[in-house]
Length: 109
Image (cartoon, rainbow, N blue to C red; front, side, top):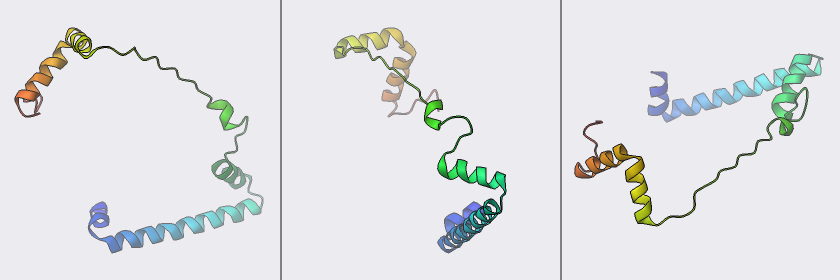
């Protein structure tokens, strides 16, 4: 019901967003106050969430991933169709059924 109110009442949605903004500002202010008073947990949270601090090593060192994708060479349309028909006959049958029924596969509906 709550989410329906948000959709149906723009004023309600706007008021909610304003309240969330106030709540966020208060939470950030309190977090900073605690960090300034020596709360180590609050300080670590600020460092990690705002400055990407990590305990052991920089983020870049942990997320260095390399992906290689090898694509087949171009083929002629007739060759491609023949390969698809040979490799995936069920897919071809489904496409043919959909074409006969205006894009709806009656067997799957």
